[in-house]
Image 1 (tube, one colour):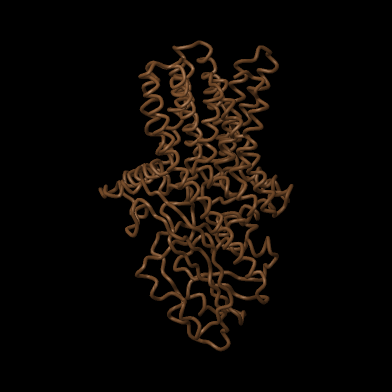
Image 2 (cartoon, rainbow, N blue to C red):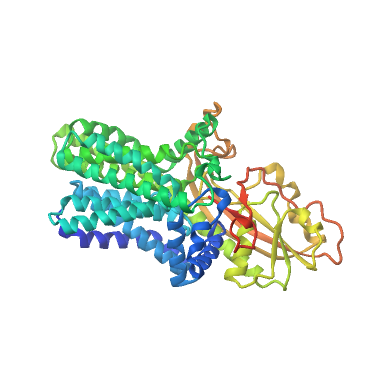
Length: 576
């Protein structure tokens, strides 16, 4: 593919990103997982940019580039979810175009590019990352892709001025990369691995790998200096960052979760890995180089998350980028072999292509399910916020959950900043009803979830176990009036091929939350998610009803106090 094909590539990237995002653009809502915090932080940073260096000091985190980017979007569009999702489409388009250009510069043709773009665009991690607004991974991957592309283009330029400008772009975007999410540090060993593999094989490619490795190290050192100068706490002293642990139990459970996600979202990679290893021994030089680079990339972006105690699907977005490059290289080679190879070669090639297509179809089913669930959850949450925005002044809202989750901290931010209702107070648990309060009217808000796939996109409240539903708030009618009940339902087909791992119950290499016992490999149900709201009058009721609380036995993540961001007064802030 010649360089003048960049216009069709950009057009294809924009069209593909828009098609994948079309359902989200048709139903744009802010979510109750960090979006409220993002909006509050954005408004604070727009008013006082220096705030970006002092966000959430107790956590040990320091990622100012992420906050600056989100604040810039907020400053341009305000609290408008559709505009935020349009920005997501633009970031998505840039990533797809960068992926295509990297493959072109690595010697790939149109078959390689088309396959890679499709594999990345419809992957489960891409769906969750771009169907939500507060994820750092899209920005992290965008800076990473631009830095890589700029360095590759610099190695091809014959103009010193152009080469210097492109290298400067690569260096600046790498600093932005490290200042967007801490896991970006894995690019140092990845780039050094590229250098070690290329230095002896090809002088030009070795020079490219050396330049990129040097830029990574220099950018990391520059960011470390900024962090040392400005971060409130060292990395190892924050209550959040301390969770990154080399403990065997943590790594063992992470291995199980990562394996489950790989089988669920990347089953098609199995035949491609086998064929790719064969191509490494006898394929084209360009394909071998692309496969080696993509292989190191995928391994690095999996290993970096093993010491972390939770594993979400969107964590695998950088892995999906490398997987798409690997898949494009292998499928492109198989396509060439199917068209021009011997009879035996054509038979092997078509077998690989058919098997890959079938397995890819299975993963697409789960990606579609993730999209439908994300849309349903966000619609139901937005409807709840809309209803609560109309309750009487100074009402108290009690979220009917046993433990504090993200919704407890996000709901007041949405009510105060989006709906302009700062007078409403939000708390959780039955004990909140017995606390002294000037509010005469209390609204008890209870989540209702049925047939939740596991795993799927991140949802704060989980479907309670069957034995815990006996005390659900259906009997509140005699003590409180049901004033709202809203649900979103969507038919979900889940192909739980990852549940084949559930027979391996050797501790610590097992996570029971990924293995529900009420379903098999195929799970075809009507997913339902919504809320009930009961109105109580404390002037007529002095005792707390014993059946107000439903129990969710899932573990909850911690929260940080509001004092970690002095401008905040709406309660603790949860982190991913």
